[in-house]
Image (tube, rainbow, N blue to C red; front, side, top):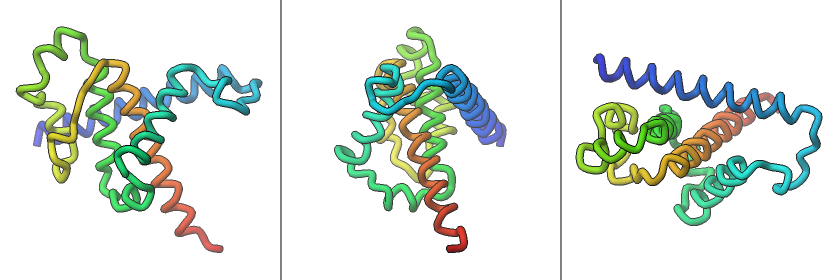
Length: 149
């Protein structure tokens, strides 16, 4: 019970933090015209490239994403964001043997734990961002499917 509450709290903090980052980026670029990938920061390009990689290399199609309606994608994003927030010492001592108590709570229970593959702090945050995009896109598709035509 406590673990579940803690996992949901961390998930909310992750979404709030990403929301602030997105609002900051939008405010900073409000008057700029973003027509090409060259206009994006290296971080933005990395997140978009990771999202494309998840689709093309991993085979996680939009149809597949649409089957995950219980927050699994967002929870996996939260796990990667949490892993990316850890200092090098914590990363060395938390991974890979123990998988980490909190990450165990965040990772979707219906997903195999071997699918969680932390890398560097930056790569984990990039994966988190790409997974958030995937879930937001899934939500948008579900909303437009329900909208009257």
